[in-house]
Image 1: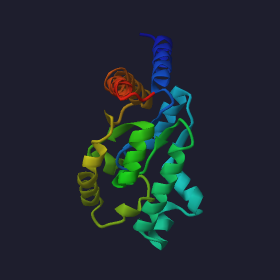
Image 2: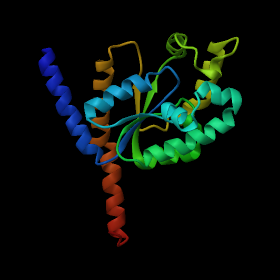
Image 3: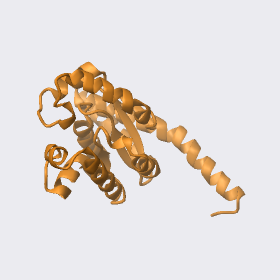
Image 4: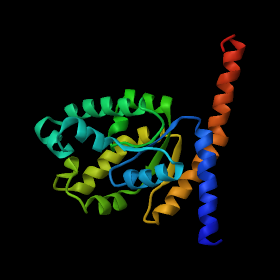
Length: 212
C-alpha cells in the first residue's frame, strides 16, 4: 500500500469514527510518559476536533506551573483544581482531551468521562515510562531518590482505574501515525460493537418504560 493510499484510508477511517462518536469526546488516560499529549494532539487533528491538555489548562487557570502548585499548595489542592478543570473541559464541547496521570483517582472525574466521552487507556510498561519521563524535569511526583519505584507504585495504584477505560491501546516506541491509526481502528471497532449495543440497549429500555 502506498503512502497516499494509507493516508486516504486513515482519513476515511477518521471520518467514520467522527460520525460514530455522535458528539462524544475522546479522552486519553494513562501514566505520565505514556504519550497522551503527543498522540492526543495527532488524533484530534485526524478527527478534525479540538485538542485540550488538562495539565496545560490547569496551569493556565492557576497562573502557576504544576511543579509550583505541588510545591506551594500541595497535591490535594492540585487534585481539586484538576477535577474542576476537567469537568469544565468536558462540558465545553466535543474534543480530544489528554488527562493527567492521576486524574482517574477522582470518582467524579471518572464518572464525567464515562458520561461525556469514549476513553482510551494508553498502556505502557514502567521501563518505557521511565525512559520517557527522564527527559524532562517537571514531574513533581518523581522528584524522589528512586523514580522507578515511584512509577511502579503509582501504576499499581492507578491501574484498576485505567482499566475502566473503554479501550486499551498499547503505547510503545513506534511512529506516531502508527499509534494514531491503531487508535482509530480501536475506536471504530468499539463504536460499531460494544458502544452501539449499549446505546441501542438503552434506547430499547427507554421505550419499554415509555420514555422518549
